[in-house]
Image 1 (tube, helix red, strand yellow):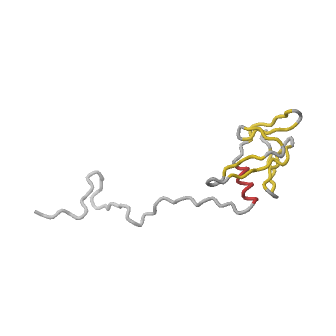
Image 2 (tube, helix red, strand yellow; image 1 turned 180 degrees about the vertical axis):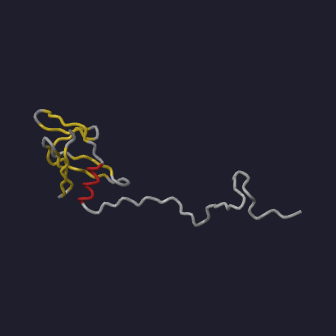
Image 3 (spheres, one colour; image 1 turned 90 degrees about the vertical axis):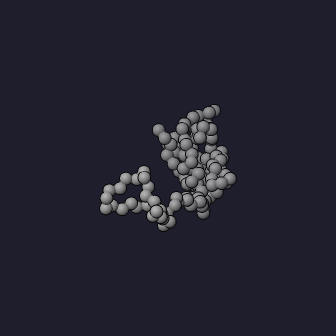
Length: 117
């Protein structure tokens, strides 16, 4: 009897006569792992932290403006915890709340964003 081929044909793959079957080889790249998030300075940390905040309301309590952020109310000078990469937690400060915008701060950096209508 004839010996079996080194690589037998796949009975579940249809090929036309004269065509070749392309199979992935060892040079096929694997999945790309995401690079770890590295926040180098206060401006980047503040921008990252503010991007994680969801402002859903603006209310007056006892004459003091409060914002509903991530399902919790915060007033001027309150700290908002924001989870970073791993176990890191950053605390973003509410610096100022006006009728149309809010200013957040982290150390010496500040960022002003408009309030949703």
